[in-house]
Amino acid sequence: MDFAYTSEQEALRDSVRRFAEREYGWEDRFRLIRSPVGVAPAHWATFAELGWLGAGLSEAAGGFGGSATENALIAEELGRALITEPFVAHVIATQLLTAIGDAAASDLIAALVMGEQRIVPALQEAEGRGDWRIVSTRCDGATLTGAKSLVEGVNFADRLIVSALSDDGIALYLVDPKGAGITLSPYRTLDNRRVADIRFANAPAQLLADGEKAEAAIDSAIDHGLVTLCGEALGIMDAALWATRDYLKVRKQFGTALGNFQVLQHRMADMLIETEMSRSLLLHALGAMEGDDPLVRAAAVSAAKVQASTGGLFVTRQAIQLHGGIGVTEELNISHLYRRLYVIARQFGDEELHIARFADATDCAA
Image (cartoon, rainbow, N blue to C red; front, top):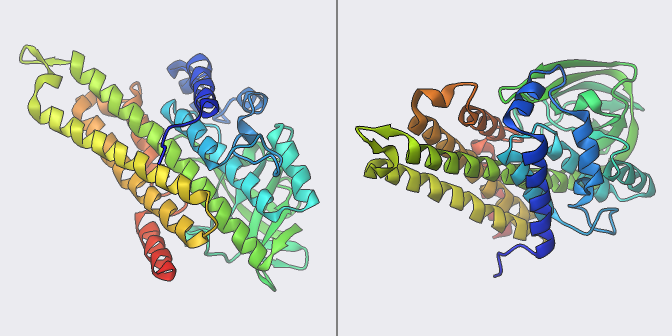
């Protein structure tokens, strides 16, 4: 198999990296995470202008001819720089609309790709603890009642895509976050992202899809979101690995650089192994995303998520240990890398959930 990226994909990666170096230095990030909104609205317009918001969509779906690979590449570079824009939420929203596939969904995709609108998914509930398949929010007639948790990007959202129970099972609804019957409870997560819990009390809603179509759309979109999240985790792990390598080369103890101590070299080797294992499983998941078998896709994506979670936490914990006391300070990026990976490890399901999902998918496919 050829694991090399195409020239177009490498160019895409380079454009994201240049943006991060130019617009998202360490002081810029500090200024943003300390602001009331936590992001720079102008950055999203740049994402649209550079084509990143449609890079992972086929031309038939209204994008620029890419796939999940392009989204993972973008997220990898965003993760490396700890950029706080809710890119994963955008990927899930566009994939939900792509799976629905009607004319109304196509119009919404066009607005999303151009950056003219922002639509975010509201698929998780507190009872599910990251499991998007646990839904208790209900739709009676054309109004929603219930609650959703950890909705990222709602501060700038023009619409929400909400999963809820209907007479035909799980359904997807389009909701105005500023409409009647909606209460937002915004807060900051451990990694300085801005999210909100949302309560619906007879909130008006427009049906997008229901029944098997809605369930298939959610499963596909979540898998796209998960591989994008794994791409972000890989970028964070890579940043922590090489920042630690550079630190050990210049920090001296007993008259010699720390990097000369064999025991620390072994720990760096373990960090590299975990990083490369995450890269390999991400590539495997991206390959599975190109296939038509949802069970194979689910197993591969959940395997990548488990490794990104466990391996990512191992790498960043080791990075903190090897930096010593300075590793936990606000001024150094190592502690921020760890906190972001701590959240990723639990976002859309923790290790236990995805091990069980992997086992179920493998058993059903056998």
